[in-house]
Length: 592
Image (cartoon, rainbow, N blue to C red; front, side):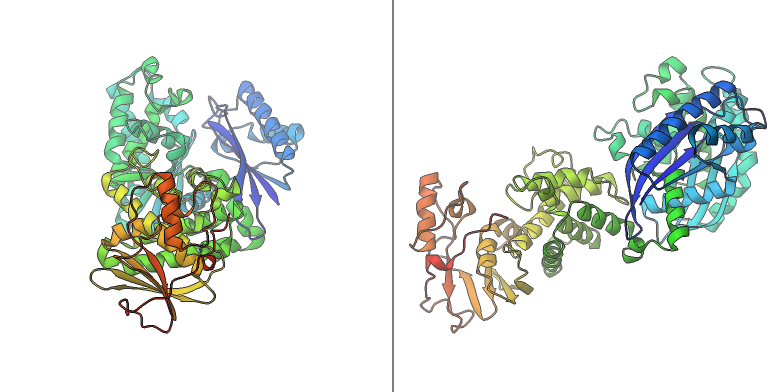
C-alpha cells in the first residue's frame, strides 16, 4: 500500500508519500515542503490570518493532487500548535476538508513529541540506548527522553521560533538586552525539566526539524564535503553551534542572507533558533547533537503501520536500523541474496583470521559485512562498470543510522571489489583521512579475495582456513563442488590481500591443492589471463600461454606461477614432481 503523511505546522507544511512493503517496512517515494507561516500573527489564542489560511489551503490542495497521482491508499494529516491554539482553528480544518478532501486531526503537544521521538529513534538508530530528542518548530519546542523508540518522558513548550521572534526580537540585529530577556524566559520555561533529564542521563542528543538542520548546515559549512545530502546523522559539536549563535546575533538580515549554509527563507528566524538550541544544549550539558532529517511526518507513518499491523515485520527481522537499511537498499536493487551472503561470510572469515595483522575492530568488521552485502547492487544499473554504479547507489541509497563518512567508506570498499585498487586521486577516496584510507584498502582487499572465491556464483566454497607458515600463508578451502574457477580467480586477485598480510598467499583445496610454486612458472597476472575481449587460454601450458599474451600487451615480467598438484601427493610435498594442468581444465571467467 501507499501512504501519505502530512504535517500542518506553524512554520511549514510537509508531506511525504511512503510505500509500505508487504513486510511492513516503508520507503519514501516523494516529499514536498512549503513554508507558509500559518502561525504568523495567530498564536497565543489569536485567529489565523486570512492570508495564511489561503496560502495553506493552496498548498494542501497541491499535496492532495500529488498524493492521488501516486495512488495512495490513505492520507494521514495532523495539525500542531498554530491550529490547536487559534480561535478559528476549527473553521480552518473544515475548510481543508471541504476544499481538499483531507481530514486532518489536531494533536496535543505530548502526542507531537511522541511521534517526533519515534521518528528520531528510527532515523538515527538508537534502538539500544537512551536518547534525548529535540525539535524546534515555529510555535513549539518538543523535548523527549526515551530508550529506543519508546518515549519515557516528553513535553511540548510554547517556545517556537515564530512565537519567540515576535515577542522578543525588537531590533535587527537583536540587542544584547533582548537576547538576555529571551534566554531568561527560556530557562524559566524548560530549565527545571532539562535539569531532570540531565540527572536521569542519556547517551546522545538528536536534533530534528528544519531549524536545527539549517543551523547544523551553517556549522558544517567550513567542511567542503558538507552538503544537504550529507547532513543526515552528522554530529555537530555544541561549541560549533555556540559559534553559530554568536555569528547570527551579530549580523543584520542582509548580512545573514549571505551566511554560507543558511536557508534564506529562515534568515529572519535563524537568530532565535540559534539562541533556543544553544540554551537547550547548555542546560543539558551536551557536547554535541546528532542531526536527523526525519520528524513528525515519518513518525506518523511509523505509528500508522504499528497501529494497523501491531509490528513492523522488517524491523523485527532486523532490529538494527543500519542492517535493516542495508538490506532494504539491496532488495530495492534486486541483489542476488545467496551470492551476497556468501561473499559477506567469506570476507568476515578472512577478517577474523587476520585480526592480529590488521588490528581492526568490530566496527570495521561490520563495515566489511555491509559493503559485501551491497557490493554488486550496481548490476541493477548495468553490469559494465557495476562497481562504480555500486559506489553511486550506496552513496545515494538513503542508508539510515550511518554517519556520512561511514557511508563513504562502505561505498568505496564496494567500489574496489573489482578492477582498479584504491588510488589517491579517486573521487571520495582522496578526501578521506590517511587512517581511513588504510582501512578502505584493507577491507577492499578482503572483499576482492572473497568475491573471487565465489567466481562461479555457485557457493562452491563452504569454509576456509588461513595458516601462517612463516614465509608464506596457506589458504585451505573446503568445497562442496568443483572449485577450479574459484582458485583461478583467487590467484588473480590475491595481490592486494598479500600486501595486507605481508607475504605470498598459497591456495589449497581440501583433497587437492592449487599451489603457487616460487622459482618455477610465473603466476598468471590478471592482465595476462584476460584481455578486454576475455580471451580463452590455448592448449599450451596456462602460464606459458599467459606469458605470450603478456608479451603482446607489453608486460615485461611475471612474478609467480601456479600449477596443479595431484590430490594423492602430500600438502607440502612441493619438491615432488607435479602433474601439470591441461589448459582445457581451466575454465574462463563467466561474463557475470
